[in-house]
Amino acid sequence: MRWDAQRIDEAAAPALLPMQNLVRTVRTPEFEGVTFHEVAAKTALNKVPKASNMPFGWTVNPTRGCLHMCRYCFARKTHEYLDMDSGRDFDTQIVVKTNVAEVLRAELAKPSWRREHVALGTNTDPYQRAEGRYRLMPGIITALADSGTPFSILTKGPLLKRDLPLLKEAAKKVPVSVAVSLAIMDTELQQRVEPGTPDPRARLNLVNAITEAGLDCNVLAMPILPWLTDSAEHLDLLHKELARAGAGWVTTGALHLRPGAREWYMQWLNEEHPLLVPRYEKLYRGARGGFTTYASKDYKMWLGQQAASARRRHGFLDYAETTWRGRTSPEGPPTDREAQLAPLDIPTGPAQPALF
Image (cartoon, rainbow, N blue to C red):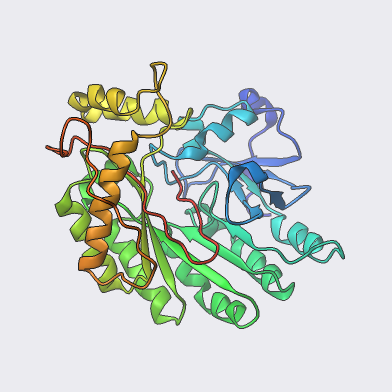
């Protein structure tokens, strides 16, 4: 193969080995600083634990690690299972299941397969830049559609446009749901906190392309970042632009600071916005002190109110509304955006968690 000359011997990267089912490790000029670990996957379908309360039972993840480099990504912790760190290794050491489509097709052909909904984009983005090199998604989409399996995709990647014809054909056979993740309209901030992702305009164009192709497109505006993207002005602009792009619905959600992501996001916050660090420590303080994953209940309630108002102003009225009864924090109404954010999640059908 043309990449053989760029193969890296195992001895060149002992810290990354052993890796189960590793075929080869590759670096290429197009992806400076990135190492791809190509593996032969034994399975493609991942069973979702019932305790997770996800609205789908199965996922497919063609890669592990993500070139989007989002500081807040909840999936960072999973890289530690590979004896890699959840920071730079997650961003630059990408595990690629090069045979995932073939393995998936074999699993879907088993008599025991019940054609349950399968979600893509729950761990790392299936349309990150690596997909342009490996082209795994066309085979995955075709395998799912041919087997009669409904599926959903969540992405930040405009590369999905390449597969719109395939998705349109798949939608004739099975229910297909497509969602785009976009929560930050300030391009400078977005590029600092999500340095490997396409900018907001590119993702708005993706939403428009999906709807122009005749597919519904929902948007996950997650995560909203306290004191950075939770102002009424930012939420209004976000919903205004999403309405213009043709989004069918917008689901807003709070920043989660799970272990793995927490360390890297807080390190970034300390470097970029040090005055916010004490506020975050207070906002994400657990009952026993120390950090907890979720922002406070009052903040989430407040954010839910702001998001619901923005949706109504921009015509997102097709879903059942949840009434927020004017609840504020014990210290009074949030001022200087000193509140905390809450998701107003009202999906119809299988929804996808955002990549945070």
